[in-house]
Image: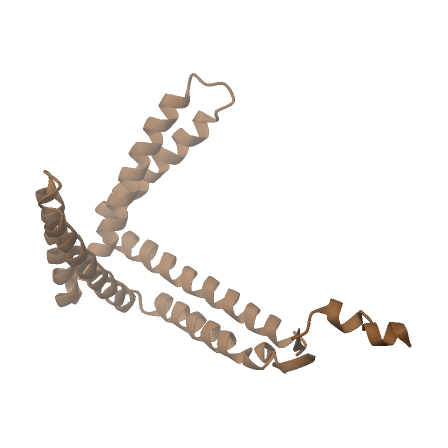
Length: 207
């Protein structure tokens, strides 16, 4: 017996991703309009994530204290993460200041590693080590500019957050309208194997 199960209603739920995408786009625009508020909100969110990560890392260290000799390193790292996260979560001003500085520090570290990698690749033919060197030096300069001028860090951080939100929102909206254009098809299932449906019975053969 062949049964048709209920119609697939994906195209009727197209407005969910469209609504989500519109919300993300609005948040992205707000990020550009209110950079300091964006930094505070992002800092609080990162602080909460660090608290959870620190607690989990500390619990993991205590759980392995009898099997790993250096469990204290994990415990110290977990406590440090939790303390930093708590500071960011409870101090919005610190969160707003720390994010650009963290971005600048990350850019400097990334630039140093990129520069070292470029110098290491220099003897290799076709390695494009010159491009890697330029990218590394540019990242170092960007990080130093962020430390020298706080406004540059604010602009860089909020631009990254706002652009990411708008791109994600546009992608979600596109998926929603794509779902809208999908036709509704009933999902047909066969409870009886095709061979039993098409094979004539012995009585039919005798007739």
